[in-house]
Length: 108
Image (cartoon, rainbow, N blue to C red; front, top):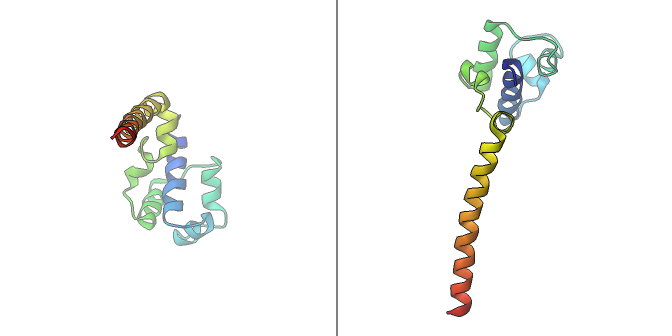
């Protein structure tokens, strides 16, 4: 996954986390209609000053938009196997504990 994809995934994540539409964010940073849509569709990439405005509006640090682990989608794309293994291990431990408790409950 390239830097632009990471940026786009994080932008979408943080924008949705703030309950903002693409148009809401476009208006907040004083850009023309469909500006954020164009970024999220990978048509163009914002200049540094615009990245700062986006980050300020979303109440995050600009670098968070470039963090490859900034949102779950990036984590899954970057390190899917490791993430999957961790989840399986955690679920396995929980299931073993639940099974043990249920056996103890039934057998007294």
